[in-house]
Structure formats: C-alpha cells, structure tokens
Image (tube, rainbow, N blue to C red):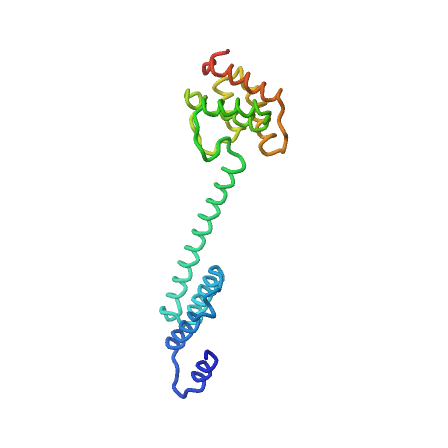
Length: 212
C-alpha cells in the first residue's frame, strides 16, 4: 500500500510543495514500518534532515544569515548536552572505581562491626575495605577531615595525614592496602586486616595536630 501511495504522488500532475512533501514523508515515517527504528538513529536522521533543509534554504528561516544563526544555536545546544553527559559519566565512574564509600551510607560503628563480621568469616578483602571505611567515617564524624563525596583512599590519606602528621605514613599504607584489595585483585590477609584494625584504634584516640 505504501508503494502504491508513493507512486500515486509521483504520478500526480499537482505540484507538491516542500511543506506538503514533508507532511507526506512524516505520515509515511509514522507508519508501522518505522516504529522499530532505534531512537538514536531516528534523532540523528531528523537532526540531519533539519540541518540539511536549513542549509538548502528550505527551512522556516528561508536560508541566509537566519539559517546560520539557527544552525549555530542547535550546534551549541548539542555541545552543551554532550559535555553534560560526559561529566555525568565521568562522575559515575569516579564513584564506582575510586571512592572509599559505596552508595549506602553507614556510621563508623556500623562499618567497624561489618569489618569484624567479615574478619570472623575469613573474608579478609571485605574486612579490610570495611575497616578502612570505618577509619574514614570516624575521621569525618570527629571533624578531623571534612566529608567529601567521592573521596578516594589516597585522598583520605593525604587529608588525614595533614591533620594527623604522626600517622601520615600509616594512613598512606592503609590506602594502598585498600586499593590493592579493591581494585588490584589482591585477596587480603589476616595480617593486613590486623594492621588496619590497630591503626583504627590508634586514630580513635588521636587528636588533630597532636602526636599519639
């Protein structure tokens, strides 16, 4: 049926204007044969057609400077949307692949209890992660460091090390251990967990700027 209607349009002696042709094309594209076209492909096709009409002088602007202004605005909007999407993607990757904390917010005591539970099961990698998170949350709760969404273990060690200089080296070692078990594929060990647990206990009694 679509072929018959298209042939009839071509054979008609009536001079079909650009606007009428566009309406006919829109009706054809809205039929079932085009309903399964991917959204991205459809948007790309429509934008390309729109810009092509402007460049050929067939758009509402009638070509010339007005068309160039519209094209510039469209391209600027597309560029802004692209940058926004890239920033969101970058932020999401940072949260998933570098941050100390996950999506669920817990207190230091809750992280510490979870670390002890995992250690009792011999899940050393998870226990190390939770103990480092307990350290990070404890320092935030005591205002030794300011809360910072997306903070990495290395960034935590740097900030806490400046506030607690006597523990700076141990904090850097703890950050490396956390990254090793979280992103480096290391399995974690009993000794590694005990090292973090001992550091946690020392930091709980340490004051910013005062040697423990």
